[in-house]
Image (cartoon, rainbow, N blue to C red; front, top):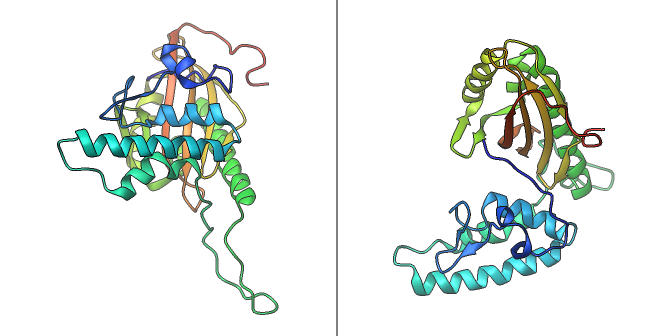
Length: 257
């Protein structure tokens, strides 16, 4: 697993941050200079959200300019087939302003012939936060108790959990096998802490800290999970970023208060 540390001060341009945070594009191919994924890579997206905060208009303007430059570079320098316009739009812009998804519900007529509209953005944010809190609670209770099913049932049937960016666990069966493998190595109940979720559109992030005992040897894990939910509030995709250290180390004061 890889570590995720969002410690730089908000408002600092990405190119002024420490090299570990510089998930910047390499032109003319527009791949990430750190992880080589198509830019903006998942880490760059998260860092850009931190940098711009609530200024989604500013973020969209910035990304539109990057899309303009990328389109020109790809047209001039790419030897293979070009990405479709909709692929470029989704890659550069769509993720920055996620649209709320309507809940599955019957359209019941209202007085005057009106029918309910889609869920408002504020309600969607609260729904996602609730779903993320339910996920965090399931892990907080299920991890020490090794209750695999309470964790797996929150995954969409076709959802994917990235235990690392090199190990996708697809569907509930894939997640179940991964969790059973991890829990099977632990000879003592884990001590776990989960922070309050932070939500944005249909996604949320949850920081966590755990002291585990694989084969009775203490191992401390500090991590963060990025969650994307479907319309039924089940996890459609989760990506885990974590750092481990041998030994037992409680979380620093103030992080999970």
